[in-house]
Image 1 (cartoon, rainbow, N blue to C red):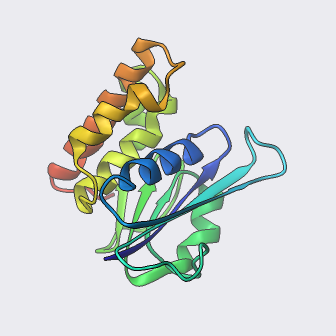
Image 2 (cartoon, rainbow, N blue to C red):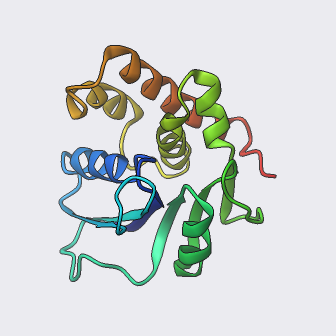
Amino acid sequence: MHERILIAGSGGQGVISIGKLLARLAAETIQHITFFPAYGAEVRGGTSNCQVILSSNEIAAPIAEKFDSLLVMNQQSTDHFMPLLDKNGLAVINQSMCKAHADDRHVLVPATEIADRLGNAKAANFVMLGVWLARKPLIPNRTVENAMATHFPDAPPALIDINIRAFRAGLDFSSSGDRKA
């Protein structure tokens, strides 16, 4: 197994947070992991991304040139990173903030709208993570849910609850036929 993942969006969209969570949880069952964040000039509102590589073999370089998975939260990231998707890769795209075409490799998700209906548009990152893990079940869903409170120890319980509900909404979205627009 060798999965190269890029998560990208604007600062403040939780891109780095879900990348860290993914890397931390994968470390429990996957032998080799890298996590490489990149921040824009200004953190909140600027572009940010992180690369996570999960592998059963040693990882030669922590930075990839092509990706097996993309989770893109905004249009700037879609425009910049979509050409880096491997020909057999999967892109989960926040349709609420991105214009992209749907096909076998692109899953369009109204993540921000789903999270907003749950009570906090900032939980869109967890909707995206749920959709991705439904398609690529590299970490058990229950493990993700159980880790949310410990990964975000200063978060109020209501925020943890919304994040869990957003994650489940992403899983449900994917299982309901991967509606593509």
